[in-house]
Amino acid sequence: MGRYPGKRMTAKKIGAIIDKLPHDTYVEPMVGMGTVFFKTKPVKTEILNDLDCGVIRTMKKEACRKKDQTDCNRLKKAKITCGQDYKKIMRKYDSKKTITYLDPPNERTRCDYKHCDITTKEMTKVMKKAKGTVLMSNTPLNRKEICGGKIKCRTIPFKYWGEPRKDLLAIKK
Ligand SMILES: C[S@@+](CC[C@H](N)C(=O)[O-])C[C@H]1O[C@@H](n2cnc3c(N)ncnc32)[C@H](O)[C@@H]1O
Image (cartoon, rainbow, N blue to C red; front, side, top):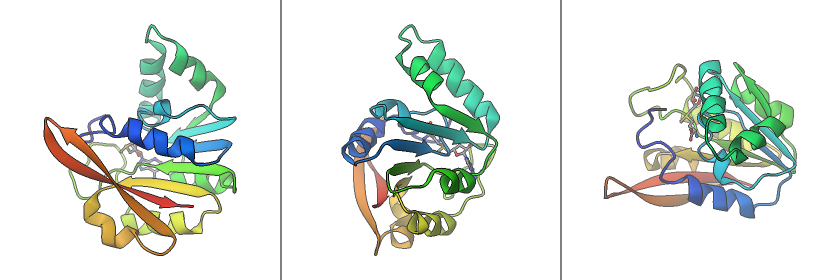
């Protein structure tokens, strides 16, 4: 998964933030390689999806070829779909006990995925409408468009090749 610099640098921090929020259902409707998902503690119901079925196949293959089968076994218990738009998955599983984590393709950088047509405007609107808690990773460049009112934002610092960088984490409780 090529999105510079991926979620590799921030996944642990985001996972720890998710773990602290009360929920019994975790939904990641654009899961990619599951970098953040695998850093969260397992909960009762886990729902994973990506519009790109090839990505889901690769994610499963990578998790299950590791010597440590923890991630692979976790995937066996999760409900995994592909080919569905994130909004459909959110509508289906949204509840007061649900946490949805969104990590959209960055509309400001080169598109490294098969599907990259989601806008920040649309995602912000979808977040605000949800009953449950929704977290969205994004670039600080979109801060003005996303943050405010129901949506609180945090900055997640990380280093990329030794250079300090920042990611935005928007949270709607
Ligand atoms: C930034 S990546 C997710 C990376 C993931 N968090 C990880 O750490 O591996 C964005 C993903 O969104 C998926 N995607 C794009 N548009 C989508 C849509 N409308 N519904 C669901 N998934 C979508 C892409 O296929 C891609 O895998």
